[in-house]
Length: 370
Image (cartoon, rainbow, N blue to C red):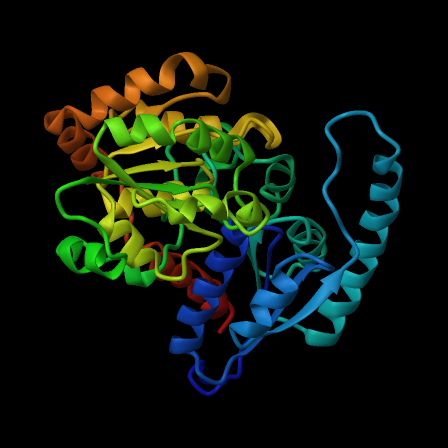
């Protein structure tokens, strides 16, 4: 059969957070543009945000009864075992019914069972490792997956070298051309052009410790001639919306126009999730990373360090915020030279063609037996 006339079936799994969902959607969109007649099916975790976000993007999704394993000894890990067995059986049922030509995993709770069953059935499989330090699921899957797309150097310590392709992480297409929209972006947020604009992002749900820091430092920011765009997250918006009335602070539960937010920013404070780090490399603005310490393998600190080692960002651990933040922030605000240096260095690490390059690898797997 001619590959152009074949209707491919592509199954994708990734979820739990936006950092796993949006890359999966980006990959699907790119493949759909190449194969308009292809059939797509996503597999996610029941009651997680992918069950809402994937249908909004126009794709079908099946849910698994799965959650993460607890790092501490707890009774919840007993239920995890039942959930894992249930999810493996459900994944096999989904694969038998859908009969995909290729399986793609971008991480998250559901990705493990689905990809494990796919590789056991010898379905051509690709996993995308977004972090600089992989989790246990991808380490296990890597032994049988055909391709492993990564965003950082040095992953041959964890994965078979012959399977690794450095592609980077998919990023929103609307942030690729923000270099010249600073004036428009500041006008969009009704910001003053004679003040430094600080963008604070803690993920779609928010970051409790970063929000506490910002609340505590509002007067300090004023003394630094700084105005802030503060994305506090939907979980925390009611607690911090009171500060919206102040002239120098805008509080948002969620930022729908990240292209404008990035364009308006002079300095950015962010967590160090894989997708955020990849986006910030593309944006090319000075960044202070405050990694979450509450993630598996402390991978956010490792992600941030991969940038800091190339002199592309500043890292402050949560435990050091009280003693380090004001000093490091004021040094950065008052040094145009340092701001420029960080912006240039982080931009050098950007991999802007990640979505296309990952889709290329999926296409090679689709064509392998045709």
